[in-house]
Amino acid sequence: MCLHRSADLPPETGAPGQLALKPLSAALQVDASTLPVAARSGSRRRKLWELNHRSHCPVIGSCLPMAELRRLAKRAGLNARTTSDYSLHVYAVGQAQERGEFAELMQRELERRYATAVARFASVHDAATLLARWRETAAAGDVAGALWAALTHPACDETSDKEIYGEIHMLSHQVGAGHRADLKRLAELEAELARSAGEARRDRERAQRRQSELELQLRVRDAQLAEARCTASEHEAVRRRLEAQDDALQRARGVETEWRRRAEAAERKLEAQRGERVGLQRRIEALDSELGELRGELQAAERALAELLAPPVAGGAMAACGTLADCSVCPGGATADLSGRCLLCVGGRESLVGHYRGLVEGLGGRFLHHDGGIEDNPKQLEATLASADAVVCQAGCVSHAAYWKLKEYCKRTNKPCIYLKRSGVTSFARGVELLARGAAVDAAGNGEGAPLQ
Image 1 (cartoon, rainbow, N blue to C red):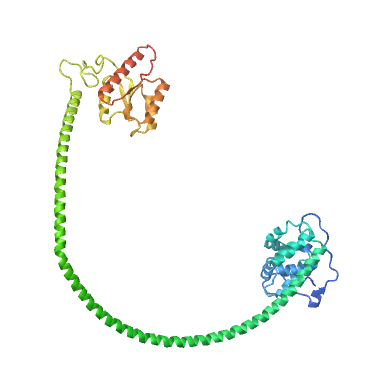
Image 2: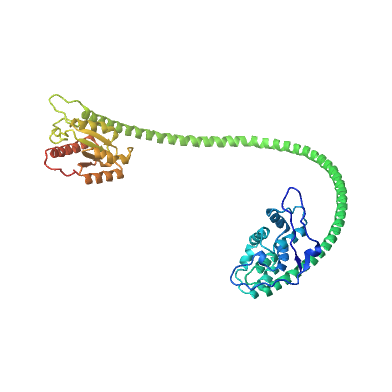
């Protein structure tokens, strides 16, 4: 095998240069004193400059493509643009013998490029297994990766190194011989391709002439076909006219049948509408009756409301709820007094809120209202409760959340509270009367008193 001596490569400058090589006889020598591979201990893999000198040529030639080698030379600041592939290869082999900038660049690129192959060889721990793995991987086609992973492996001894070197050396000869055979076969194939191209060109010319003849025949037949289509079109027009006349005759015959069918359908529809009219008349009568009943109920409600809102009559006192003081709604008449206390009404009908307010203020109290979470924000309920001295909850007109929050707050703060099932003014007046009496007791100093539930 050849030993490549180091050659001088000019640095990257503005002017192109060639790799300055020594004469070929001095650059290529038969290596008769190749240093043996030292036995290794531990798991550290060899670097490029630690390999046997004879291995640098196959490693760089097989594992680093020329395009990549030129890129690394440019990174090292070398001018290799006009240098031949062989000259650059000789220079790289010489630089790989010692650790330097170019050698380290090649080392990092080899490690990056063949990391997968190195990982595949990581499980090998002896030289025999290493040789077997090298041959298996090389036979599978990954010669470059297997060569780098095997030669740098810690288990690669002198014997393994020689075996691998010999096999890659012979493989390079076989590849060269095969390449020459491939070149010869390529030349034969190119000659055969040229002959085939000539025959194809002649076939194409014959096909074009035949195509021209066929196109001429096709144009003649297209003219004949157009004439035949014109004749057929005239025949078709005559046939359509005959069919149209026949259709008109059939439609004329069917007009009487259609009108009879429509008359029968109209008669049936008329009968159905008569039945619907009778039903609607009965419905109208029922609605009129129901409307009369509703009007009577409305008049009764208006009379009751008028009685509640009527001004006091002569000789009678007026209760806080708008009724006479001697009525049976408020026990003891209007003798109770809220004494400026604030009463909160939770729930109730929106149309009666004004009456609730008048009743409370008529008893000398202040009035607050919360609709119980229907439209008002339920989060404001607790702040409103804190401002009130007593609470009337119309349980049928509040949300569940407001009801339980109200009940829990009054129980926790011992605030007087009464719950009503109905939302009328009369029920509200009874509740206010009870709370007013409870408030009076508290004001007399007879104890705090329990909430009225």
